[in-house]
Length: 338
Length: 256
Image (cartoon, rainbow over all chains, first blue to last red; front, side, top):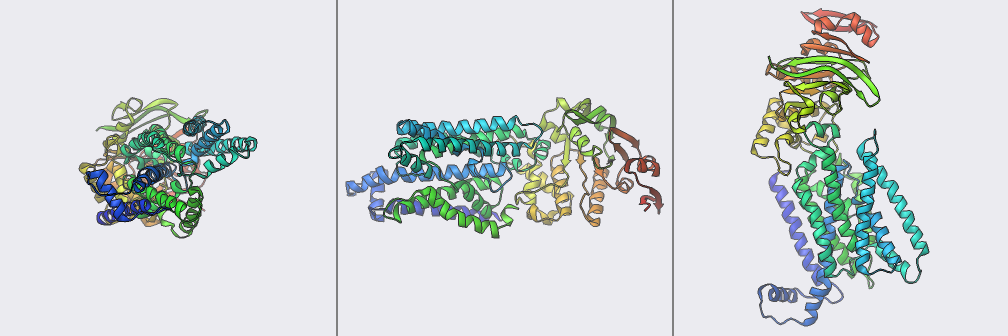
């Protein structure tokens, strides 16, 4: 792919994201016109004195604004983490929760709900649970000798994920079926409906802290797609680099999951789609994957709150949209990952 | 003549299992060492030890006189290039991207390749004569083309010592010849080359020295003419071989 056609792809993706964002602000039970949005933006950004109904301001700043920002943040974070993991595990079918971050976060959140804690504690529980699960998986995987380190990590992740799943099932069984069980189910399906500005302020620094090392290491990430021997012979301290990437991707995913609940498929599909567009070179891939991830989740979340009289869980929608797309990739688009 | 690679009293193997011991070797610029041995004879284990990927069980490896253990990983990469056996490409990187990866040891931790790295990669591509493959993706190359790309990556490392693990394995006849020709050309340019092979005849074509490995260590070491004899080959491979000469070039002919 030439430099020019790559530039077209980036520009197209960025433009699409902007258009989607404007649409997302306008769409909903209380539709807003482009003129109203423009007037409000002019007032807020440049101090213009257009007349704007107070309801419009409330809807944009209090209701849709945080939710749209959350969708952008969570989508970009999950896509970036997925991109890193797919490269690192040399497998295009890997998603960010392969090392148990989602299962750990789910258990943390479910425990918080079970013990009737506040929303903040539930979020912190999810965040801490995600980090702890991956820490445990990494510790187990690193202590397996005489096996491929990548395979050890993945197996440890699967086993621990199953164990955490059993705990979650147990708590669901014990939970109060009228108050707690719906809250647990709702959390596990993922939702951006209840995201407040304070949640964003809490999650964004951690997501950013995860993104910075990935961005700095963006060229070096390519080396992780080689076999360990090859990478080491090229001068890469593979184990240390891998640990750095696991930390960064886990931080991003845990921060995202803590405010959104579990939203699958973004981290698996989006890196894949981005790779089909610009190839596997990580420094070209990462920015595009983040833009596409943000756009995808924003589109899904906007659909989730507009297509039906009741809100649909975006985690279900991503799967409904994601699986057919994935199957199509699986059958037809061989070249992108072979 | 500068000694590029040296092993002294080298013992190699995996934890709890010795594969070979007491190996001495020295390789200078312009020399090509062909490592021969049966399946499971320890060629790859020896190579991994020479590359510092596997800890030596005894003795030491020296690169240009300095102990491998004392050199940081990046410095090892600048002194010794590695071409693995059958590079398994997972992702559709272009040949140019792959060759650029050879520059890792010259690029800062957080940096991307600069103009000098791109120039070095292009030069390596040119040396191997694979310029027309530069924008192709490695997953679509034939085995021979991919092997040339891997050699280009090793050249891009800037190392004057190349270690190639069975570079002609699973290549067709023409590509085998092409790879051997490149090895000879590189040696003529002053590179030191170590490669392993399953075809003893390749030693006559491309090597200045031969190391014949069996389980337990080196069986023989010397010039191809001295080492590749019917007796030695029978001992290593367990089959009868006739070593003859055609127009002054020796060749191995199995007796069926």
